[in-house]
Image 1 (cartoon, rainbow, N blue to C red):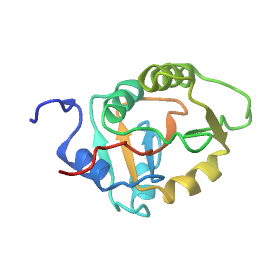
Image 2 (image 1 turned 45 degrees about the vertical axis):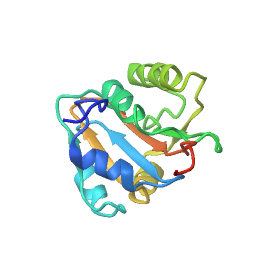
Image 3 (image 1 turned 45 degrees about the horizontal axis):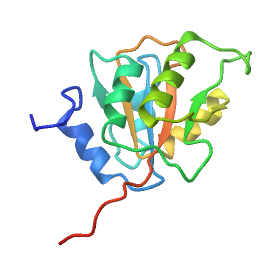
Image 4 (image 1 turned 90 degrees about the vertical axis):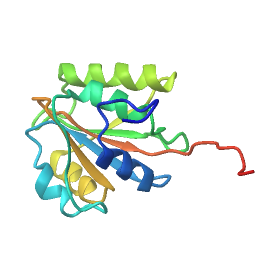
Length: 152
């Protein structure tokens, strides 16, 4: 373990977060998502698991290190409900609450049709699968920039 890093974050996930650049996408999903299949087509090329975490707690841990992109709207995309594009599930509100609290501002979240979401997920940097049972627990987070001081 290292000081200041959430213990839910594995070395592999921290490594992936460090490799990501501004504008790269991270998919966080539930156990029903075809994560292993899609992960093979991502930049990272393999699935990252966060066992024992639900989506809100996993997202909070990830966002403790990774800022959301503040230059694009929306910085977060979720999967639409099949047959009900305007429908909601409790997980959407839970995710929205985490995003708004962690970012300290209202975060815009857009929705994508299921197969469009899968295609966008394939273009992401990495896929993080949680133990969350969903349903529709599929979100894409766009990485932002950290304003760092110059090296001495």
